[in-house]
Each structure stands twice: as C-alpha cells, then as structure tokens.
Image (cartoon, rainbow, N blue to C red; front, side):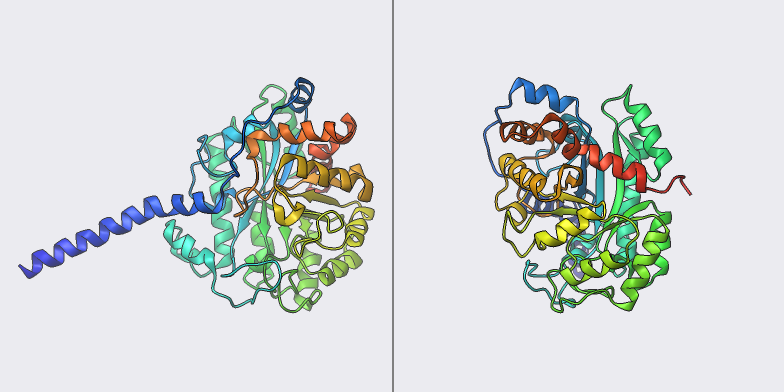
Length: 392
C-alpha cells in the first residue's frame, strides 16, 4: 500500500514537472512580451510600396531567450520568421540575454541581486551547464539560432563576415523572404569574468558584444548600476580584444563614464543597439545627447527602440518622431532601428507591422533617401565595412 502511494505521488510529481515544462515558459513569454492592443494601422499605398522596396535592419531582439517556435506565426511575442518576412526585415541582430536582476529598473540595480534568468533556464529545460555559467547561456542561445538557420536555410542565413553579407545579398535577389541573422550579446557579464571567452564567443559566431546590461560587472559601471564608474582594467583589455577581433562594440546600457572611456580608446565606430535620445525622451534609460553626437562623429550608429522607456511612448508614430529628432541631432547617416523586441518590453506593434513606421516617417516629412538609410541601409553599410572579411 505504501509503495503504491509512493508510486502515485512520484507519478504526480513527474506529470507536474512535465506540465510546468510545457506550459509555464509559454505563459511567462506571453506575460513578458505582450503587444498593446490596437486597430490595424492605416498605411498609405505609397508608404506600403516604399516599405516593400526597403532593406530593413534591426540591431536588437532577444527572441532566443524564449522557448517559442520561431518557425511559426505565433499569437504571442514580437518576432518569429513569418513576422519578420511579413515586415520585410532583411537583417536581424539576435541578442543573447544571460542575466537579469530581480526588481530590474532603470535607476539602480545591485550586481549580486537574485537572477531571473536562472529560473527561466531551468523552467525551459536548458542544459545543466547553463544554470551556473553565463557564457554557456550565451552559447546555448547562439546554438539555437544556428540550428534554426540550418533547418530553415531558405528563411534564415547566419552572417558572420563581409563575405557572408555579399552572399546574402546575392541570394536575396531571388529569395526576398531570406533573413540575414547576426548574433550578439546583451552584456559582457556573459564572459564569466574570463577574457578567453571573448575568443570563444567569437568562434561561436558572435559578431556584436555589448559591455553591460542592468548592473555593474567586471568591465565597469552600468547605466543602471550602483557605481557609475568607467572602464575597469579588465574592461580596457576586453574592449581592445573585441576591436582586434573586429567584433562590433555595443555601448547600450553602459554608464556614461564607460561610454566616454570607450570613445577615447576605440579605433572603430560604436553602436548603441537599442536606445532613445534623452533630449527627445528624458529617461534614465537614455544617455546624454552630447554623447550620442560624439558616437556619431566617430562614425557610429544609434538604433532607436520601440518602447516607452526609450521614446516615451510605444507607437509607430513615436518611433518615427524619435528618428526625426535623431536626424536633426546626429544626422541621417547615423540612425538605425533597435527594437528590443522580445526583451520584456510592451511595444504597440510587432515586427510584422513595421510598415507603420515607414508611413509615419513620410507623414513627418522624412525624405525617401533618409527613410532608406534609417530603416536599414545604414546597418547594411556598417556590417559590410566592419564585420571581419572572411569567416575565420
């Protein structure tokens, strides 16, 4: 009798674990990555026609943090292959989130705060080695990206070099649905404090690395940390190696002192992969406009996000207004899109609806040339010039 009770209880436990593994991650995904309910956007024929003729690129989406099937047009989340194709997206940087502090906010986060990603990794059935290693979490997500490309070669091509860009553009002439995917980090705590992991991540296909997320790390201060410090000695070493390997350097979430330090030593232009302009939307999420201008003067790109913390709203109109502000501040050659889709934000649209941004840019007086650059040509030119030449 006792054995039977134990068997029943054990069976219930196993079933409960399986049910949680199947349904809990999807529920968390739905709750963390919603889209504000809205009526279908009214887009002019001219805007729709122009949009379909654009090269569109996005510097930041965290889609591989979740267990969602990205080959399906899901009823939740912001990005999947069908939605990217519906939105005419050509280039998508997929960023890998490895740590998120409990109580995450824009003002102040402790480095040793409880980490939310550990529980998510366990709930989603990630390999045990990812439970304690941030580098392993980044690599696991990168492998998911590459696997998706291998299984869907007509939909997704991984881009790691200038040669890959050429091949991608050639293939896209006959396959407009092909998406060029790039891989980046969301913060260099993903190095686990070991500079050797820069090379390791490079070998796994990472071609953009940001230095910080929501907390200070071994490289220096976060914009949302407690110290406000600049680059540490380790941070200087990492930045130099990133440049030597021709990895694109992203200063999103870095403290203003870190950004200043990087600008002093960098020989290559920087990217701010998802942000807003503080002069347009005063927010603890955004660095000073003067720093944005300094980044642009060194040939860098500022990629505008789609959520209220960056642009003080979440509509296509608000995105277009932030971009128009940026044209006046840094110039049309230094602007890009950086959605932060699937990054636990609440946008007013998903990636299938990007034509609404094009429509609003036209309404706000942007020229066709400006729109082409902002929506993706600037990103294309940047990776054509600053990715490594060969696959290595």
